[in-house]
Image (cartoon, rainbow, N blue to C red; front, side):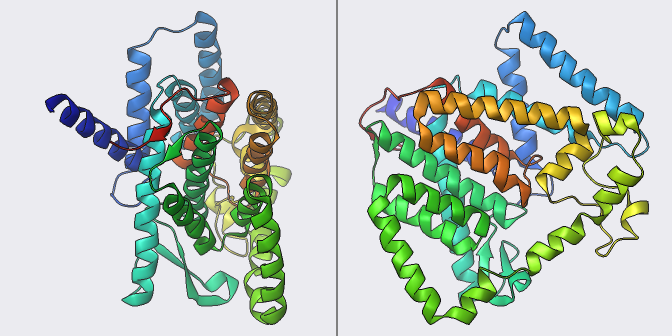
Length: 373
């Protein structure tokens, strides 16, 4: 009895830890990044590593350090965070129960996010939802949970759904699986995030073909009936044009003012200097587009490395787990990031860890029922 209690408490603590890994607006400090950095430190401290990997790690750090020093007046330490994220993603998969903890931790976040959305309709607006002013329908609220953007929250939802299917593919069922599945799917729909609604349709196409065609027929009928409303919500181009204007600062900083070193190794920062941004439409140096932020921050060389590594990851996922997971992997890391990138968010590396896990594991050897207890 005592051992069972200790085991349950340990699991709850780990689930709470992974919940906090997905949280970055609940506390004044970036608790998600601090926990991820702490976990990486502990893993590296208690494990021995291949000398060649150590040399590669030092070369990456040297690469970033050179870019940081060369652009010292405008550099930011945030450019080093992806190193922590990648180290986390590569090493955390060595622990067999980590997928379960990520699943339950993110599921808790999703449930709280849904609750906060409903409370925003029933009582008053809160900081954890986003009214869709930008889509022209401010009476609709999209959940952000305890993340900075709707897309980051949706990434956690998709991650949870992918883990659910991966377990199911390997003959493992969660208790209350249908309810969990419905909650996650509803959370994705409630975000009204076109980017990840496409991912949801991809998942349904591969995994729920009958439902996919039924849903497609229903949506077509609803679209015809409520033509004007759906044109405003789904086909609204104002957000697309605003994204184009958000790139004004990037285009001037990179194509008009950068030198050969910055073209190659980057600017040492993920945000354009305010002296340039002040002359643009939105007067912000934030770069939303993933392709642009990679080239600006890490240069052409860094962008090329990203393309090569993700392409290799997709190939490995395909070899181990087939077309479905490889296709979703390609969409998330190549296409989804072009709308609102997450390279400096822990959600990106939680998702990356899942696909790295898939690239090295083709099945799960556990009991046929998975629960927190």
